[in-house]
Length: 330
Ligand SMILES: NC(=O)c1ccc[n+]([C@@H]2O[C@H](COP(=O)([O-])OP(=O)(O)OC[C@H]3O[C@@H](n4cnc5c(N)ncnc54)[C@H](OP(=O)(O)O)[C@@H]3O)[C@@H](O)[C@H]2O)c1
Image (cartoon, rainbow, N blue to C red; front, side):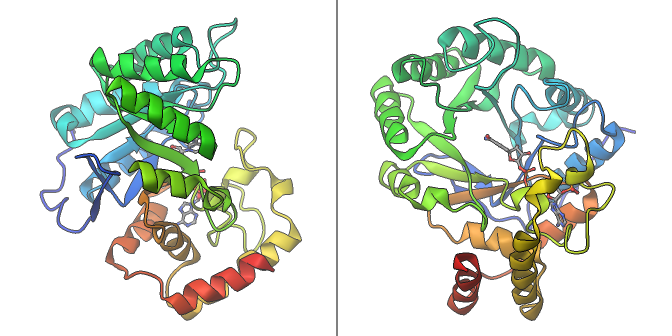
């Protein structure tokens, strides 16, 4: 049966303007890096996307290389969109990216115009879409002049293949340069997708300042440190977890005893405040003034349901933020 979205889907979600643009994003967005590949269940994927949309999540984040194999997440998403979301395309913000290795030879990786434009065409074909809402340069490519990469983003927008341009994983100074170039081209940088969580605070060293000064929106990826900032690994490595899967990017070796000690202490703070560690981790990321949205991955509806609770929660108190920082600097 084809999907009929909940008529109350916009009643509870909070939306925040992305930088100084006219585009609003839900404070919780969903990413398709894991759990949408050929190795995953399409029924589960569809259920998660429908549940997300039913609860006001309008932003769906992809990249050319999500799978496995690379491209599979876009293909699966395309099939689901065609079947279930076709009538709702104008209610969705869909993003994709190019920057990492995608196909053999010199034109399937990096930041050249040749790679970015071909990759975007391939992404649109896989998703069976006329355009994406946001097209990202997935990473800085030191072998390509920044002007060329930015011009490719500008062209994608001018050709109507993307509505907005974004960058991801760019250090502060190159973010400033990218923003200057994009402004001069007339296609301002909408958003920066950054890795940010309680276990990775690098963007605090300069990047957030640039985003605030340039009025660029910010979306944090891996805000749960791929699941480590949840109750997932408190008592071992569950068989169905990302760390246990051979294709998962989270490796068991990363989850050390030292790290677990920290995570357990954070979990205690969460419990005392009657929230889950996942919710506390998401709220902690959202406390940054430049943060537009947190971009989570989920492997089942239960996780999504739990994460969506943040919409009803108030901000973390100064006291809790202080307690968290004491553990993080330990
Ligand atoms: N721009 C970039 O370079 C870049 C890089 C990485 C990711 N991203 C984007 O960011 C998105 C999110 O990244 P991510 O998947 O690493 O994010 P994450 O939200 O930090 O981790 C997601 C994992 O956490 C676990 N999880 C989520 N909610 C949970 C809950 N309530 N309770 C217990 N466990 C929970 C699940 O693990 P299990 O699978 O073990 O259940 C899930 O797969 C990606 O899908 C992608 O769109 C972008």
